Structure formats: structure tokens, C-alpha cells
Length: 344
Image 1 (cartoon, one colour):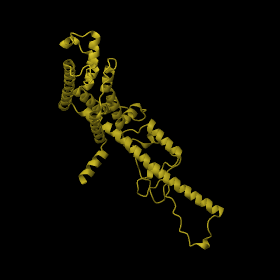
Image 2: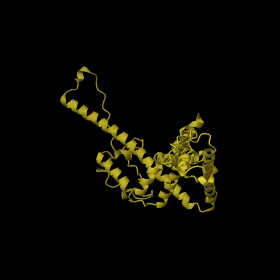
Image 3: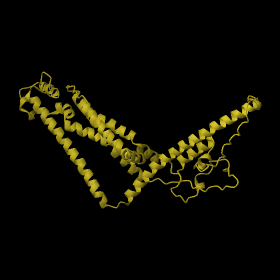
Image 4: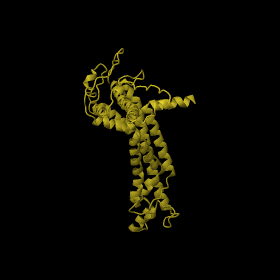
């Protein structure tokens, strides 16, 4: 049980591991979909190529789009590409690295579908049966051109009366299937060779740029994730304080209207617990969240985050980008001192 928990925490904390898991899941779904698909070629000269090529390339396009939608980094990449520069310079190399990473994971499932279809050969036979040169086969010498075209269109349908138990149909089908498998295995070997060369040759070059782009791409992803989590935390705390403020105001209104029961009919009331003043977190780490306490301030903060990302320098002055978010100075209780902090 501890091993499963450790594995779950690893996937939860690593965005790259999550994306690899999603990529593997899409690949398994692709294999299952193809194995359960019922292939039925129309065996018509006008529609064979359309059906075969459509089945060969349409599902990969859908799987590619699903891979982009399932990959969170695709959205982060577009946001990083389109964001205003603000106080942080934009590095096109980071966007290119993230684009390469997203495309590699999104292309895994489509490539698997195409390779499976080529190795199986049914789509290829259906798509190109009408395009076979009849002169390569001796069985078509006694047929007219129209009969040859009709016969070739019926090649994928081995149960059709016109081509049932015909040696010519078997020869054409075997020829196209062998050609399809040859293309499939060639593409498989090419992809394996490219992956092998990329893995073996990469350590031979300077890794500085690669490490920098990998670090900052992970940073952009984690920064956006932490910002979303902090926004959710602030929204929960802000809603909690608004609800408490509403009940407190209603209690004051009820007291003013005389709707409260006479104190003689009930025991002494417990003193009300005042809400902690803004700017104090009582050691819970929410002082900076409580400083933003109105809708206008929240809107300004979100607008500042989008239009002017903070500089990647912890020694930079916080007033460079955080000015104008509050309308009053933070409350400091006598006997305490304001805790210094740096906005990043």
C-alpha cells in the first residue's frame, strides 16, 4: 500500500510524469480501439480510396487533438507565447521546448494507429485496390477494362460472388498487404532509429541550453499551478469572511429591530468573538491573502498577474509590480511588527 501511495504522490507532484501517464493511456486506448473496430470496405470504385484513407488518417487526427486537450502544458505553452512581456522577458526557446514536448506526447497515439493500420493491411488494400496495375497479373488478360475495374474494386470483399475463390483476388490482396506491411515496418524502423540517435547523440553536445529550457518550462508550469491553487485558497478564505460578515451584520440588524429575546429569559450570552483583523494570519500563512479584501482589489491583482508577470528575481523590489492593489495600509496591531515578504 505504501508503494502505491508513493507512486501516486510522485505522479501528483510531477506534471511531466502525469503527461507521460496520459500519453501511455492514450496509446493503450488506441490499440484497444483498433482491435475492436469492425472494418467494412464499401467495395465501390468511387468510395474505396475515400473510405480506406479516411480510416487511415481521420482517427489519428482525432487522437492528436485529444492528446493536445489532455496535455495541460499545451495551454500553458499558448499562454506563455501570447502573454504580455511586462516585467519578465519572453524567451522563445522555452516556448519551442514546450511545443516540442507537447507534440511528442500528442503524436504517440496517432503514430501507433497508423502503424497498426499499415501492419494489418486492410485499410491499404481497400484504399489502393482500384489503383493496381492489371498488367502485373496474368489473370486479367481475358477481361475488358470495365470488368477489370469492377473486379479490382471487389478485391477487399472476399465474400463477394464475383471474386469468391478467385486466384486473382488473392494475388492482388496479397500484393497490397505485403506492400502495406513493408511500409509499416519501414516507418517503425525509422522511428526507432531516430529515437536511438536522439538518445545517443544528445549527451555529445552541450547540455546547458537544454537544461535551462527544461528548468524554465517546468517553472512556468508549476508557477501557474501554484497561482491557481493560491487563488482557490484566497477565494475560499474570502468567501468565508464574507459569510461571517453577513451573519454579523444580520445579527446587528436583528438587535436594532428588537428581534432579540430579552436577556431575562435566557442566560448570559457568551461574548462575541471578533474577526481577526486584516493583515494577521495567526501563524497560518494567510497574511498576504487577507490583505486583498475587496472585489476591486482582486480584479486588479488578477489583471496585474496577466499583464505584468513579476520578474524572476527575488531581490527585486515588490513595488515594481504590486503597487496599487490595496487602498489602505495593512493593519498592524500594537506590540507586533509587520513581517517582511517578497512578492515573486
